Length: 158
Image (cartoon, rainbow, N blue to C red):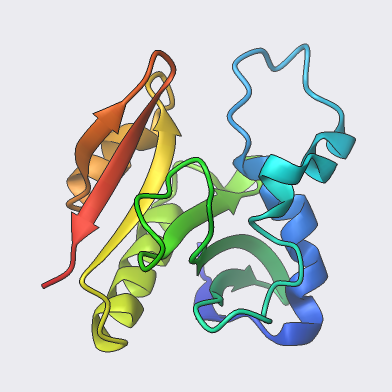
């Protein structure tokens, strides 16, 4: 599949609503959460007023003029937050584009961006049974904390 990875433009930020929903790990495909779940405050921190914080940065994957995936970071008090200085990852792809290496390519590009911007580390949260946990490990993320449901993972960028 041919696709490009590029910086998401500010007028495209409303698409983060759809990508935030897609980022929610849902075990039961036959019993999906309503799209309104993204309105919960603990999820809104990932996208509300995106572009207004110094650390807000988003890349997207595009094919045939359609944005099919996004990876974004911001320094927030989210599920994978480790401190007030470390940007936290969020990533998702529309279902039909998963398993093609696009997510890995998006993550790799974002990691490169964070290194060039001078960050020393980045973090994320992932449910223990989410297939993406393996991808994060392959990209160099390490488990630094966990609870019953999820891992908090950190990548040291130096």
